[in-house]
Image 1 (cartoon, rainbow, N blue to C red):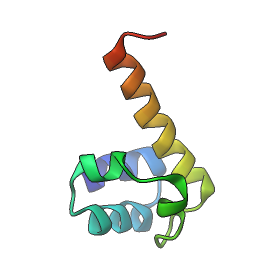
Image 2 (image 1 turned 45 degrees about the horizontal axis):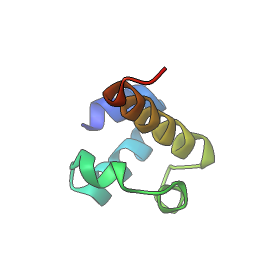
Image 3 (image 1 turned 45 degrees about the vertical axis):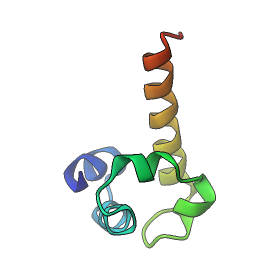
Image 4 (image 1 turned 135 degrees about the vertical axis):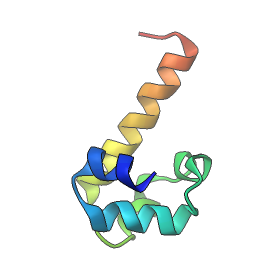
Length: 66
């Protein structure tokens, strides 16, 4: 998961912080709010917004929305 987060965010520290916080469990990451993410090392508002947008896109795909 760290490599995928690094590819998305372009920040190795941010990717490692997220993996450490979630134990590598994407379900835990999906349940985190932007404010929860921004307190992690390497995660600013931009990175947190990218993650939130990614999960919104996935949610819409699953629901068949446009």
